[in-house]
Amino acid sequence: MFVYEEDVQLCLTTLQKGGIILYPTDTVWGIGCDATNEAAVAKIFTLKKRVDTKAMIILLGDEATLTNYVSDNNLQIFDYIKGIHKPTTVIYQKGINLAKNLIAADESVAIRITKDAFCKDLMKAFGKPIVSTSANISGYPTPLCFADISLDIKEGVDYVVKHRQEETSIQIPSSIVKWDEAGNLIIIRP
Image (cartoon, rainbow, N blue to C red; front, side):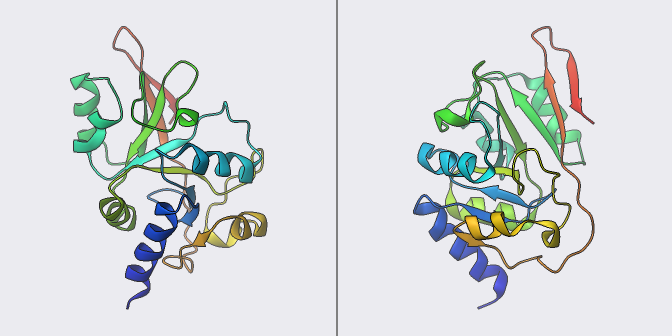
């Protein structure tokens, strides 16, 4: 069995059991779990030593599933997503069908449609969205490649993906945008 296929299967098993994974994304390496499992999400907050009021990003494999997790039906957002090429996270006004500790106090949720093949294959097999938060302890710099990830993180997850560990090219976090109530685009992180 190829490492890639084995990684997908071992991630799938870990996610189904409520575990957390360390995995490559279309941006930086991420810590992930089942985005519908509140206990699994809590494990990530604990590992990152992060206050549970600070939002985390959720990855989806395609636009078609977006309406299962947000109640925004703003066509302007959907048109924007289709036209972007850089990984971009969109903050939606009202998250639904997700772990309560992933939805901000104002009911917003941050979601990115991933274009990464590994993430897409994993989500297709899992059938649910996956959390994607940077692989660092809160307050420390975001690791820009696998070699930069601290031992605390690597040892604190239930499974570490082998695929792409050897890559040394520097990755950057996604852009973050949202729309205000008047329909204006607000760029939070370019």
